Length: 210
Image 1 (tube, one colour):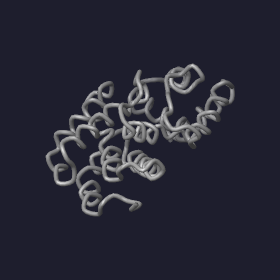
Image 2: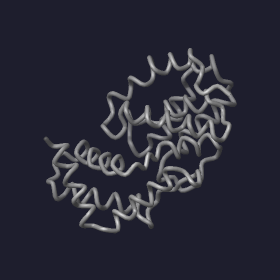
Image 3: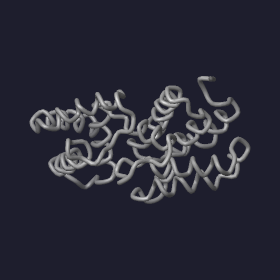
């Protein structure tokens, strides 16, 4: 199996799709989508999924952030499915699967992704490297609630960590024994220690506001 998507497809995505992420906040920018693509391709190789499909799903997964965040996964699916340029590489049936995979990638989804493609990109999008988890949450707060004081940012950050990443949080992983699973345990250990968590928050916050 080739270890990358077809070259003409990569050229299209890199020139026409990835630059759109430059308009998004730091938690969903070009660096983020490139990281998701890399992780998704690694997972695709492990499970034997179609690399072209996985590559495009990962590349399009957050394009809906141009609209309302709450429905960005739905809008992203529509953007992918309605992009007629993709018919050069994919059948209508493939595009339908890819649309559903984008729709299913959101961490707060109440059900499992409908296909292996949704599971791959959902898992890749988690990116539960501890420093990234904490830094993205701080960056999101600063970008979306600039009027908040440092203490209000901390309260928002702490609530987000509890709601999403704690042992009672809504985040779900779909590939057992993955790097994400190991990292989530590290994150949960830190969340269980509010003093340590606030130290980490303040360190990142002070860096980001400079």
